[in-house]
Image 1 (cartoon, rainbow, N blue to C red):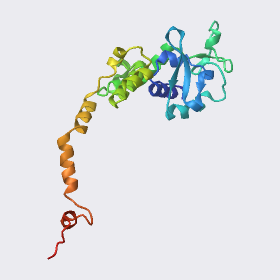
Image 2 (cartoon, rainbow, N blue to C red):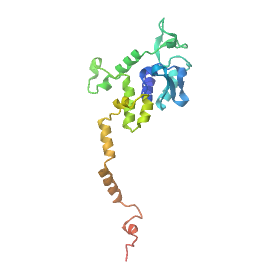
Image 3 (cartoon, rainbow, N blue to C red):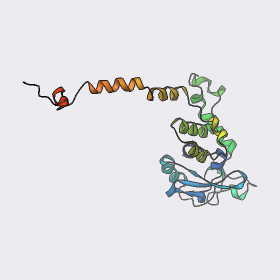
Image 4 (cartoon, rainbow, N blue to C red):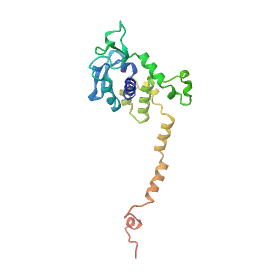
Length: 211
């Protein structure tokens, strides 16, 4: 449940992994599907998610009302900063390093679709940044405006978006097909060649078919 919620939130919000891992339960506004984060230079910003994350969060949080959102499976070791310990369970905040390890291990076959499962120990999976990158790339491919991409990514400059605004082969093919005037003309002629009831040659011309 922890990983499923974390990965879903990272993709739906297009947020940075370290920002999401720093979330506390009290930072969430479930009814608005958003959360308050501390961004670079200490600024307060907001991330927004969709129904997938919204459905998973209650099961992850259970009855907790405060403390780190994403927790380790064990009690926090001695010396762990108070801010990184759940006051209700005693467990520690999940670290970026561990979260990255888990995601990398679980995506090795996805990242290497032609590899054999027998070789999984020798494969490299994806990094957590892949989720943010995929979300913003898909937004760009779907025609999301530049101002909205800037707001979603919370980048300061348009130039920072260039890495995401690179549609893949399938997206380019779909774009070209959707703007193929010749194909639209052929589809239109096929539709016009099969008139519906009451729209035969006589009714179109206004003349009767008989003498």
